[in-house]
Image 1 (cartoon, rainbow, N blue to C red):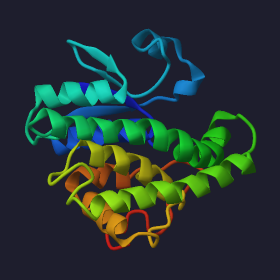
Image 2: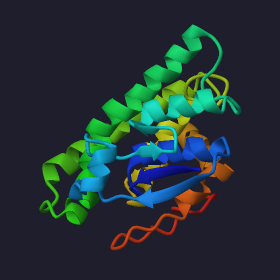
Image 3: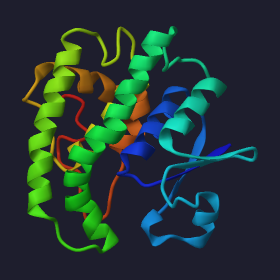
Image 4: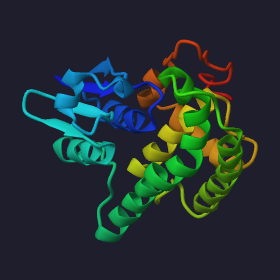
Length: 221
């Protein structure tokens, strides 16, 4: 049995949860308020970040390392394609959403609107919120450009890249910060991801003080 130390609105934790659910890997979720720097948690990950995956054989941190470990341990269904070029494209997009999208959008929207409040770090910075609201348009347009040329973000099959993107967007959708009418292809893509059984636990997430918007768990949004 694996234990996953996570926080519900962490996109990196959500990515790992999606991968584990898609591969039907049983896991116990342990909610961790990582910003409190609990001593026992810091012994698991001195970096002080979630997610952390633990079993009786291994303790892993960093969402990409965890996902690639799970891909090797449970190859089916495959979330990394065959072929060096195809794998490189999945990894490129995985890094795009984990790094560029997260820094430019998620930190500026979720970080300001939610994380500051629950971590007791002051009030939202309107300049950062405005920057995030502007940048998300570029990212949605880029996703639409990809989906106009491919069935899924990285190619003809669903991959880790799709879960990386969906994890970020699902956090922002929880706080109604995604304009799904901006690009129909992106909306259709998210509806397909959202309808998968692997997504069910994410749709059930509840963060005290931040109720779900009515459309969040609606598969026909």
